[in-house]
Image (cartoon, rainbow, N blue to C red):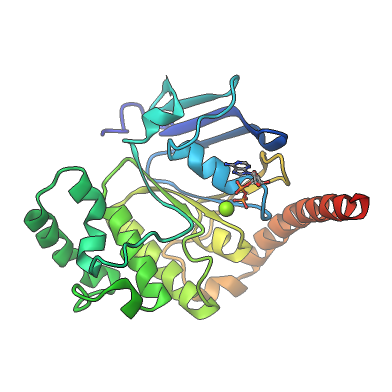
Length: 273
Ligand code: ADP
Ligand code: MG
């Protein structure tokens, strides 16, 4: 589990990673690296390959021949990452017939921890995830924000070197979303995890990230890497800070250019059809 063998050694590196689905080139020559303890955000227009990148790093999808993955300095296949990462896909995937607590322990229970022990562990974590007193409720009895916190708690409980989140707050209203971002930063600082966070929201990417990676339109690759030297803990006022706005302008410019490209490509196809 130790990722501190050599200082500055990336936890995970992707080198020239591509992914093709039949005729569709989803990713092409994508390079990125994540250092231990970092919170990296990836932002890009819809359809640029964010979830494809997520699936590769989660070990669910192999990249095309020619690209390389390195975990803790060692070359590996994507499937070998399966045991090393915990992930929360775009849909929350709570089981409707399981209570909050039993949904939260699902991953560690499947991994073999006895249910009683897992439940005791989860009970202690509930307050931190804003779920105290809700342990016996079912998913349909919860708000959207609470459901996402149950899914996040499950991901946190499944302790791995790297945590992957694919647009976890994408379906929430703006206010709940802001609360969830602040809350995620709190838990992240307390638990010191390495996080790769995928979003299409520029504010969210900047507010959360140590670095923001902006993806190009499909086929996706990293178009811009932006270090975010804003102080932590990040406060809501940050959104109007001149430095935040300066970084946001740089990011928006990069992404707008890409969104325009994919929009024009869609229009061209529509006209041609
Ligand atoms: P994003 O998450 O950025 O919206 P995705 O990674 O989901 O983008 O998709 C990128 C492109 O790859 C899209 O054109 C999508 O239709 C295509 N794609 C993704 N997964 C598959 C798949 N399993 N089979 C075929 N095409 C896929
Ligand atoms: Mg996606």
